[in-house]
Image (cartoon, rainbow, N blue to C red; front, side, top):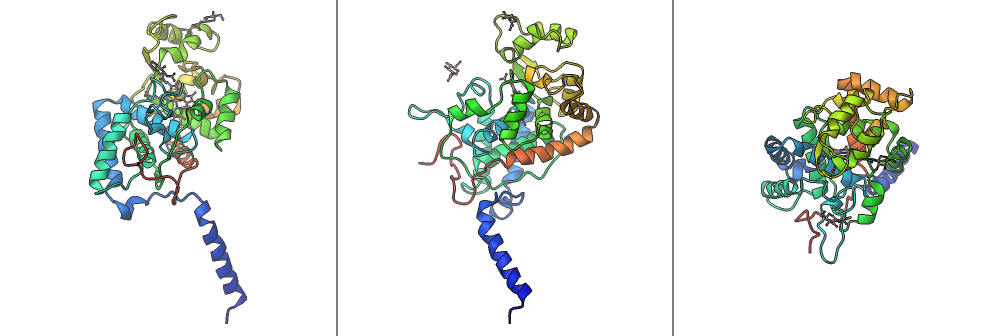
Length: 322
Ligand code: HEM
Ligand SMILES: *[C@@H]1O[C@H](CO)[C@@H](O)[C@H](O)[C@H]1NC(C)=O
Ligand SMILES: *[C@@H]1O[C@H](CO)[C@@H](O)[C@H](O)[C@H]1NC(C)=O
């Protein structure tokens, strides 16, 4: 005889099961049975690449961001343009700017070898490489979730629309993040990724020459020496004054009006806003920055992943399987 409560339990379980395919099925242990060597192999290649060039950690972290903000974390950013296909690599925020594609190819070759086949998606490689980069440069580990599959398509238009511009004001940055289901706190924490890496002169020229009220004068004049009013568009400046270390200096710089990008300084305007308070808090609490950054990275990494039978596991991260 079924009691009322066991009946209820059965029905409840059936309802849960029927919803399961709708829930994102990412989890930290996805490759544990499929290929236990997958994640350690990615880590090895990432560490080798960063040892060769510390900036690569920043470049890999940014790739995951630019992937996730354009129709979800689906490896779409990795698809090469062809004569018959326009992808995201040449979208305005990416063209001559995102980098690290060769390292992604090296990782893919290494995991395919370690796993004896095509098991690990390119979208997961981006998520894991971002995590390993943060850790290699001094951040804290978090349980990176995996199980994504790769997109069959990409969209330059969507990349142009969805990746925030360095000329954005605060409200537009916040509404961009909110449109991705992310919060003010996520905006502040994830922007903390600018604790590592570099930007080209053309992305901050108008700030260092024209924002005299919102920028520290000596910082502006120092940066101007590397970024002339005309020319030198690709000259690099560090996004914070310790660009190879994942620390709180980015936030400390913002409090001193030493943000490099206009969009960076918009997060701290000295007006006592909630954003200001968060920036100030994380400038002084490195432990919380590291932990909370991991939480926000997981939230970003969960943006519309392809799972189940959607998409594919790409053999070559640069093109869809034929
Ligand atoms: C909040 C809005 C954001 C804007 C407007 C923005 C804009 C930019 C710009 C303009 C650059 C320099 C690109 C170049 O000169 O070629 C850059 C670099 C970078 N961004 Fe962001 N970004 C934002 C958020 C993020 C987020 C959420 C992450 C990661 C979680 C991130 C990670 C990075 C990294 C690591 C670099 C340095 C890359 C390298 O050195 O290769 N950014 N960003
Ligand atoms: C991307 O950059 C290259 C090299 O500077 C340029 O020739 C090309 O027109 C750019 N593509 C787009 C879509 O802007
Ligand atoms: C600064 O602003 C002036 C006046 O709006 C403009 O003509 C000039 O091009 C700007 N300079 C830079 C480097 O953006």
